[in-house]
Image 1 (spheres, helix red, strand yellow):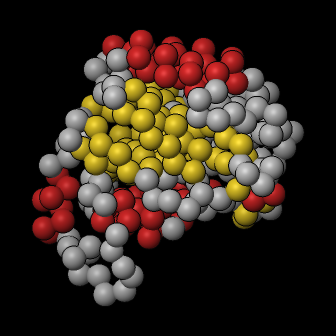
Image 2 (cartoon, rainbow, N blue to C red):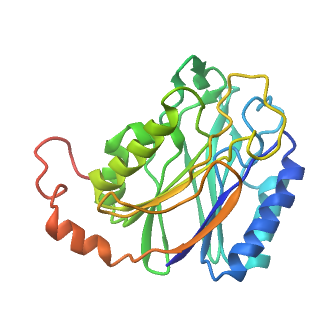
Length: 268
């Protein structure tokens, strides 16, 4: 399966960000990708007031993303915000295009490093996978990467690829943690992992945000099921298009049978 990782820097205006999504989706399709994955907060960057921009999965922003997916002829995965029943919003991944419709609400909220996502964002509770061209794919978002049980749940549901849109927080040691965690989660679950972050705003030529909100560091990465980095971007915006050899998962699982050898936890 050919996939595209679109590392962009989004701003606070959801309509303006749609222009970038369309351009990137068309580029990915021209390179033969079946799916293009955008970062967390593709709708609007963190540091924006999320309540006023949140909309349901049949709202105008989503309608336009569906149009982009249809025009490009591929599946689009993009981070957005939907209204939550308690007045907060939900940090949602939209998956749409080529007959696929799915969504995932971020389970593990970023209450760490001095930031409290749960003040404005309500957590999800459901593990979500979907199928494209006979390939089962799992969904996770940013801080979820610190919780290996979610990625093992993807594998238990039959996934051979996990997608991880993110808007990673900057700071001392944070790039090293990102690189370590993405490789570890692929190896924990013996799945391919496509980790797609917001580009570093400084490397994008954007004005440095006057907020502690996580706005991205770049370094989107495609990791193989053996934990090795296969492709990677740097800090600046870019489009990474790569082929995922899904059959490699079975070979790795025969060699490193960590899923079959588990003694703790339950299987989905």
